Image 1 (cartoon, one colour):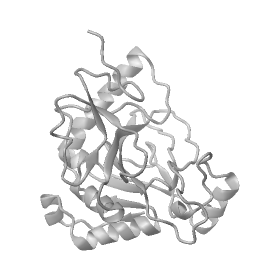
Image 2 (cartoon, one colour):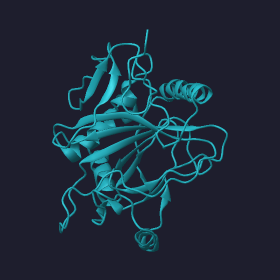
Image 3 (cartoon, one colour):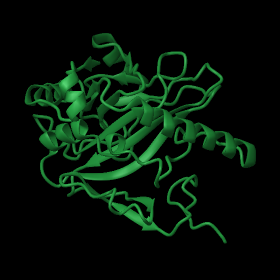
Image 4 (tube, helix red, strand yellow):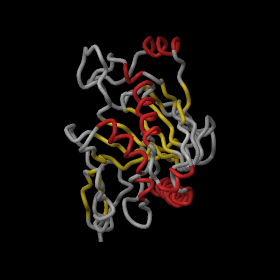
Length: 277
């Protein structure tokens, strides 16, 4: 997995230089994955990360967690919304460069590797929209993964098969490659682990094959999953608490946010429900 060299001036300004935008676009075209190191304020990461770990503990104690590699959602309200996380300008610069005007923030969610989990099945999050093309089209949705803890092989770094976004065999009704397909890719380009540090972000073409790996530590490993999608594709939508409308306005990245009266049950899987009084 390629990691860009982000300058201190870029980090301070929050703006990526043209050469790095192009380098990120090239990495996504070739590999389907690229790492932008140290581009988010670690204090913001730690604030949100601690809140989500507390939420995981609360849910485990009250309801238990049936892991579906979703975990708990990040709180969609202040003081846990940070622009350098949700609207990271470097990530937006890259996705806008690749997908053009009308890119939409269509999900503000998370994936959590819980302690003792087994390996997730290898899959792609989406498929080729147009089959049997001679040339693979650019991505129509890119996920921005933001680790809230340092991630290595001990706590469930995602395993990725770089370049598999170019494989046309993944179909809408089956996004799981066969064991033979995986072995074929491993023979020519072995899978890698997406190691990352707090403050990093990873851009991944959602056609890339990947899987969550076991967490061998005692601490759950939450990671944000923020999806940027072309406006012409079907949208999922996500719920945010009323009062955050101004935060979710951006000159380039539109959103599919639906605003719900406070307080909302953001921990409920799927769409949240208003809490009873």
